[in-house]
Image (cartoon, rainbow, N blue to C red; front, side, top):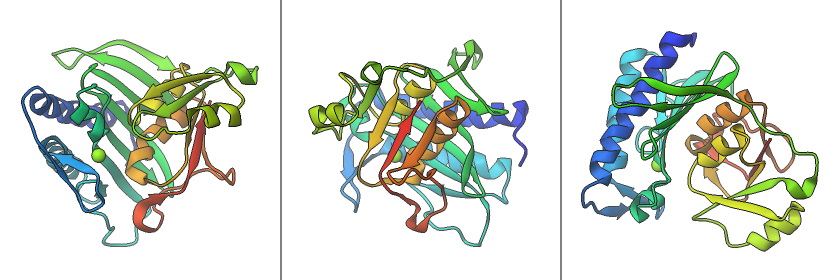
Length: 254
Ligand SMILES: [Mg+2]
């Protein structure tokens, strides 16, 4: 699949539509269940997943879809597949702090070649196109407002770099600051951290411990196209289509 402006608009619209369904549920009382891996799931995760998978299939039935809430195996050996996290930050969704996202990525030959992240509460979208990254607000008519190309901000002084830490997983804040020799840290939920680095607002996002490929692929694509990187602790570029779609620890940076 060649992703031109037209296809990009279609994929982005799928994420926006999923976000709209998520908000409908967010604004009413809802309950959460625990999955086998002890992470929470809500009706919003499942409704968004159904919508995204159906529309991606309509776009190209030949490309398989791996999703947090759906299929977790490729049926055949393929070098191209979608990675979907219909609602990243379910914990933030349940806490009602607004920091959750819709994530869709296309992986080809182990690399995320397209990524879109949509923030339903802010109606803000981040996506890649032709090796650049963009952010935009989306209005009620699905028009793109204040669209702009985004770039990382390189910081020379180590201590001026801004560390980004997960809201739900940061116990060792002081240790992290010391390790990266900076005094500045910001907290953010879900894949928004990748967008903040891509947008020049943060510089380092260390994620120690396991994540799944659908948690990172879209953010990775966006950060790459904005000039940043996502590497393992062995300084190898994070690749996709690994066994069980599991990621090792990684560091995303500007
Ligand atoms: Mg999720």
